[in-house]
Image (tube, rainbow, N blue to C red):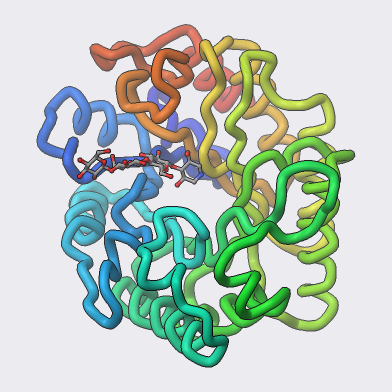
Length: 303
Ligand code: G3I
């Protein structure tokens, strides 16, 4: 197949990208988007600071702009993200009362998922809740500090009720290396959720890699999580300097795991990346494909 999305579809997978609503009017951008990708994640537009900037007042405009573009072009969407310590408005991070915060969190999940009900393939229900380093524990956040460990379970249970058709994912970075304490902490949580019937359907591995690419254990990590009974996805892939081999190895790891259902890169052109100056994406600033693009496409086509 001649595009990333069509090539991934040959094995029942998708190939996606992060999209910024403000760039949809740029024809270089939208031409590559609509030619290559069949899954879209809003880069910022469905985050709490945009969607609910003040309590109970919801702004779905920017997210809707991306949703209507995808509907017009036959693309699906991942929802990103409902509960995250970052891009969180001050009115939420200053809540100190557990009852208030619980109802604010549940209402945010319910309102946002209801607005997009039936239109989202998978939601990143909770993003980046685990700490970096060796603890394997949750990071400090208003949700953790005020609601305690149970906030993640609460969020997933609320999400299942709000849109039973959406897959519910836990999404994080630096959980790609199997032996890392952070990976093990997330693994224990997913195992616990599955054993107790807490609704969780997928784990997103952000995969923001250095130029050396994925860790040697990446495929092992994906398959060990999949063996718990969840789908796994590569959700925010970018690799410093975009080495063709590192990209191919990342894609191959997904292709080798039956429950790895898709891959999303975190932007289209290098100039769209949050990693300024690292040129970590598949297209250059003019929208021309790079060597990494060809290696990804041929890896997908060989599957
Ligand atoms: O929209 C405002 C604009 O009004 C303002 O003038 C400007 C001045 O700084 O800021 C604009 O907001 C920026 C926003 O991107 C939209 O461009 C924020 O400052 C900036 O912090 C924000 O960065 C985003 C970052 O998440 C925030 O944490 C990046 O675009 C986005 O790529 C990045 O994505 C995250 C994932 O959601 C989660 N995983 C890590 C990943 C990379 O950091």
